[in-house]
Image (tube, rainbow, N blue to C red; front, side, top):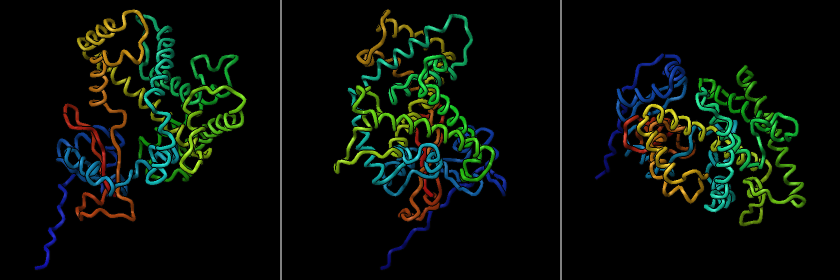
Length: 380
């Protein structure tokens, strides 16, 4: 008897969109509100379209697990990671396959527990320096301040470069002045592209936003390559600064080969992107939520005072700061810095199922109040 192949499942109808641009207008106005509405009003797997690109929004945990875990070998990192390559290149966040595996093995020593713990002193020192300039009663843009603080910490731990507030003053290094400004401009231009449907268009198109982004990226590359070049040529003349770049420069694979300048550039920019903007967003949302819940704020401060007293924190204090950990975890659950990630099967590898859900890109927004894990997944 011949096997009977079941018909492919069909997707429910999604929100009404424009015949020409799909749901692009709603996405441009407020992408998080749009994705949340899709899940709440249209179900667990919702088809949407942004211009010519089709997606399926997944919000049921078992569907997310199927794409992320069970069938993860059938999926690539998707169009969103292809877009980030314009800034990050082929770093760990955007690379795949054998390249990703090689780079991960080369970079792994930089993230050993002891090495990460050693950076805690830098984090504390820069935080205390920033707080020393704050005064009771002042009104400050907390997101701007968190962006500045995380940039300083990331630059110091990655490149041993100081981009503190006084970086433009006399005596500041060229690296500090150029690096801080170049990175800030590149991130601003990149965010400008990804917040609209310009992200669907090639960077090579001579649009005003693309041209501004390209110029900012060129300035950033010039600065980063300059730091890498000077570090390579003076590695034997100067003491090891103990930063991440020095570890990546020394890393070797099984064949004794290290990273090229381009690979070093991609990995350091990726780490900057991950350690700067996302950390600042997480901190900003945590302060926002604490301001809305003074009882939680009071409990957090009481725990910090009880554990630390008048001294500075260390890594050894973390296991005792249990409520602080819960505050951060809840902030990340409600307002994750990366609210959407796209995944898709490579063009040369189709999913075994014929369901149309797995032939489109998919993403899954975090729902406030939900208790499921955050992930955003899909297929092409």
